[in-house]
Length: 173
Image 1 (tube, helix red, strand yellow):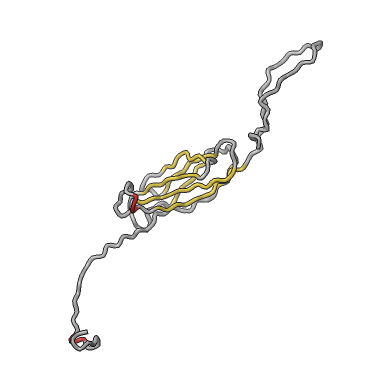
Image 2: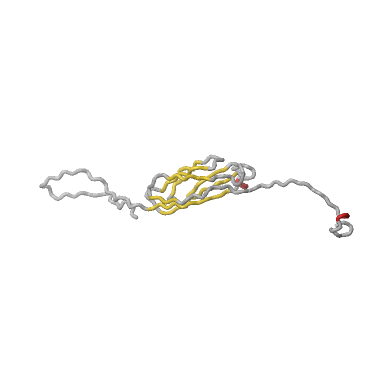
């Protein structure tokens, strides 16, 4: 404000200029596209899920790690194929034999953070996407242990055949 204490009279005001650099760390979360829910019958073939839109976020370029998990033993994760810095990968899973119900699968993308080191977790950012897997029950054929061929004479007494391995085919459900 200068000696007169008035900012509007600029002739006696003093000005000091200071220069400095600002480093902005973007800190954008990694990305992955939404994954559609799945519905399949029990004992279905191995399922393959295409994972797309994987990135470090924004225009960042850094190492990424992609992982998968399921919240239930209903789903067995067989493999997740991803190589950084690709924008896509593949998840392979199957349902547990003879089981049905619903499970949630989580896919997590993790970036290497400001220090560009995936092993130092403190600055790594993650993004998780989930999808549901509904495994429908199937009415399986009943079972019986195969019988050996029998030859019975027409004049034989009453014969008893023991049957075993009889089930409803659906593990009692």
